[in-house]
Amino acid sequence: MRYSVIIPVYNRPDEVDELLQSLVSQSLKDFEVIVVEDGSSVPCEDVVNKYRDKLDVHYYSKPNSGPGQTRNYGAERSKGEFLLILDSDCILPEGYLQAIEDELHREEADAFGGPDRAHDSFTRVQKAINYAMTSFFTTGGIRGGKKKMDKFYPRSFNMGVRAEAYRALGGFSNMRFGEDIDFSIRIFKAGYRCRLFPEAWVWHKRRTDLKKFFKQVHNSGIARINLYKKYPESLKLVHLLPAVFTVGVVFLLLCSLLCVWSLLPLALFVFIVFIDASLSNKSVVIGILSVVASFIQLTGYGTGFLRAWWKRCVLGKDAFSAFEKNFYK
Image (cartoon, rainbow, N blue to C red; front, top):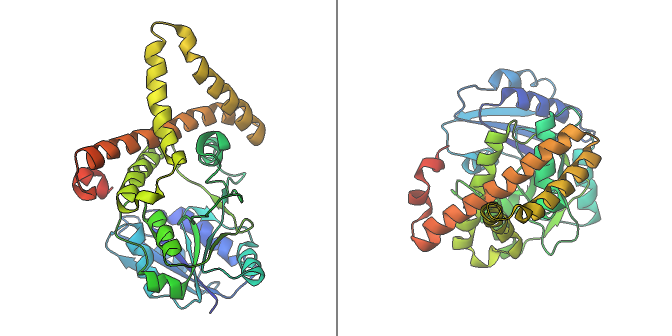
């Protein structure tokens, strides 16, 4: 078998339904699907059962252990030459698997990943969050599928890896946050070939509201410091920018108490994001929401980064004791 599609899921039966339906529509058919329920209180077994006559699909349920260990559970039961790891809130265009096959025929790779996009059916908030996560003005475009990067680190919402390499590396670590970047770093350290497949993109729903989005990016900021403690060389200048932005926002707000013109840099940022998001999404409302989402993305990540830096680098706590309350949420 060529591909094993591994889907960890936690309380998302409706989204699993959409993802499985998009797998039915794939033009390339040489694949199996492994759905692993990670201790969900709202299981998706009935949803999976609807597709047993349409897909080579296997369903497993296990106690909650987090997405990384759940992917490993699925990988241990897979048969494919390549493992394709997807988040349950993704939807695939019908040429997704064929795009991967074409890239592998063009140039071999041991690991790969593709970008994500916002589907027309997504809510305005989801489209705004997608903008905040992929825009040059918020992330430098590093999450948007840029080709001009010294190295491409696949993310687990849309990642492929040769099964032999996956098992040689021992799969995902038991890190709660940043386990996908940790895995990508180990791919490069082991000398495996890793590439961006720009045409193997997915529609990615991301978070459905701004509160959940803040929590997600805050934990990503924590993960970056955890990764720095494990791989000091992995910390790049771009990873510091949200923390600098967060400190800068606080500084400018304080300065505005003395001089209102201090807010001019923030006003310029708001204007640029609003215009760019409004034009790219053809919606003024999404433009406004994108401004909010962009501030959440930058300050959420920035506060998580600074919080983790203080607890882990200054106070010297380990990853678990520093964030025990976050660890199992």
